[in-house]
Length: 196
Image (tube, rainbow, N blue to C red; front, side, top):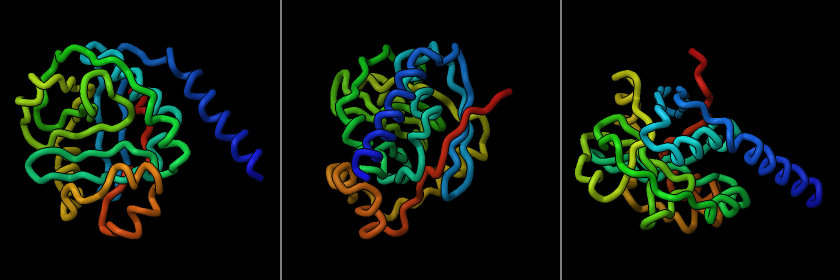
């Protein structure tokens, strides 16, 4: 049974590699969350490496029941750690180089969370308000919401836990940690490309 599990896991990561060169110059996608849908446009020129990584994550099914574990009212909503500890561990060290900041961190844009220069992996945050001060700190927006309804959904995400959820424990224990300790959290249930 264990060997079968790792076989399918290896297929998952091979599929990631297969998608690595496939991001178009612009693409659109949607997140389905427990509060509703959020729709984004991604012009690759804003953040080429970030857009490439995001396209991989969307097309390989990474965003399946991913907890929105850090929501700060009037600031950001952060997510992007897989609820499966094995998958989270694999992506943890898969860093990409920073992109220059081309667009600004205004309300409705999507940027990568980081732990310092050149540490972007899979964690993202939605700017719930204009956070232009983040531009000078190197946070390069990747996408923008395409409608006001999407931002309304984002501002309704549960913010009662603030910064209490531990990213370390989430990475190690997965969604079982969130479900047991933070039952009101919202989730990204899925993500899909939108063909226009």
